[in-house]
Length: 243
Image (cartoon, rainbow, N blue to C red):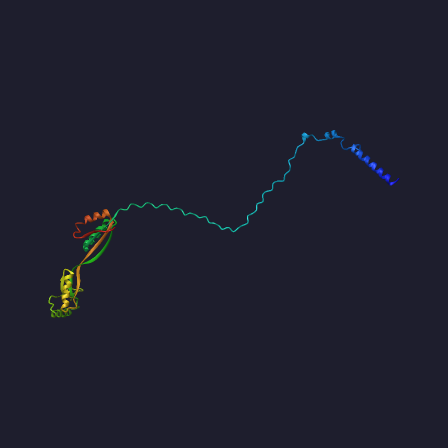
């Protein structure tokens, strides 16, 4: 048998085998025609569509912030507002009176009365010497003998109106040449003595000490006090002043 014939026979058997399989002669073959194919379909009412499986959502990736040097701004804290101070109490009106020309005894009595009143008076005391006369004299010679020698010199110059002071004190053994009520008269006499050659004579004032008392306090109380003392302060000057 030639090779060509063998090939033809093999192809023939192959075709027959394929036909048998397609027709189902060998069992379990495919269906024959459209009706059989439709009958082999699954029941459509039993078909269930499965939801498409989706992968679970991934959690968002939290990225830690990169630290950056940011200047820290301090929060300003406002200081507490202080409560308003209480309203000051009403203060009584003040007044001021100056009592001038007081003697030492009058000033002492007035100060004692004001201290006993207890009304918050404020006292300011000052003392001064008020000249009552001007004395022309030669200062103390330190001893009786010195005073006698000086008096003899003055008499030789024609000065006879003189007197040697005897009372103990800084003026003892001074030579008095005259006492005058005003400064002008004393000055004229001193110039006349100089014209006669007297060079050691001089003028000194004499007088009594007076007290000046300034009183500040409530106007009503001070007015009452001044009225009560009006009889005791005769001849005393009363002057108003700024409180």
